[in-house]
Image 1 (cartoon, rainbow over the protein chains, first blue to last red):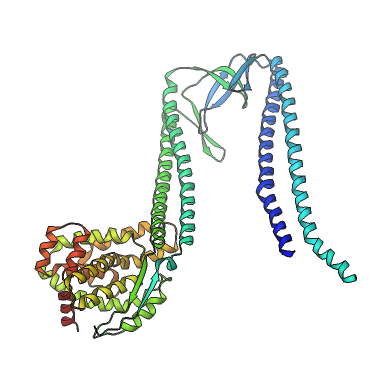
Image 2 (image 1 turned 60 degrees about the vertical axis):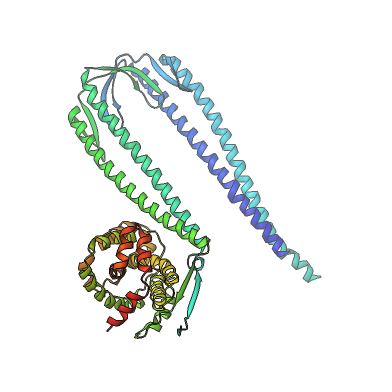
Length: 151
Length: 361
């Protein structure tokens, strides 16, 4: 009996370590990526709102050529902005259109984050469940022996 | 045949267990894969750097360039590159330098050189690891095919420490670090080598010597050797040589033993160094190689420093035994490669040994 429980305990532990924990890690990584995207779009939105607020028509920036070598660049007309809509496409927007798009995009991202949060929560719950099972297995033999003695 | 040979037969597998050798080989493979990935990474940097140098060179050709100016990570503005000769270069730690195109190109070139040296060092490490992996692979193959180590006492008439040889030597099977017990043998061999050297100078066959040196260097490098092997193989060689068997049998024995002996000779050379080789996983192989090469080139001068470099002298012994006899000179000239040396030395079973004996002190 002892060896059987030990065997079971071992199997449960292995399951946790091999499947559940990596799954958890994977889900967390994916969620982090989405967080990054969310941040990018939030920043972009703020910038565009800033441009609009101050009616900035032209802009001077430093462009990174690679390996942190910068070159001055001038944007003469800031009215047109090209936004990345995924799959390698960039769409030309005016400010208000761009803001609109970014709004919708942010909503989608928030939904995805919610999904991932749920997934992570469920994996964590599963891990807890298995650990509880292991604990029970280990406690049961001790509990069983008590009634026998009192008998 | 008066001698009672006490011998031990140990399978190589017990010295270098197959699983452990396998694990070590896997570890080395893992390390190599890591290094290769790093190397690829670095090579990517080098390529990027070169592209940038070209770009920096080309940009000042125009006053301004039409480009899409990035705005954050997900948006662009159509715009122009202006002041095309002024580059802001990051020097590190938040310091920037504004440079012209030429100066920027110079900075990038210097960076490229630093990257190249990093790449070189990584490549050297990969080479080391490769050699280590080869060594393990060989060990595994040898252990797997049941290669067996036969150790027998070397019975000689005027002996000192002959019996003690097998004892301490047996202890050394797994401990490559101790070379003390070998010193007795070394001193003995050294004395022999002295005499041989004199004969060698008479014979003056330096050309053949070098050939053999090189061959044995290479042979040895690839063999997994313990110092014990060497002494025992030598004992087998001389022992069998002592008995005046049919030359054929003696030849064969000597082929095998002297073949090993030649490797072993190198092995002795390498013994002290292989100590490091086995213990450390870093650069010892380069170290090792240098030493073996040095050993081959600095042949004669080293013989004088006998006790300190017994391993080297084993070279001499081997060479001397080949040079001595005219009949063997013919065969030596007629054939090529290491088989020659073993055959040559094999075909003169009794003579060099008897000479040794006569001239012994």
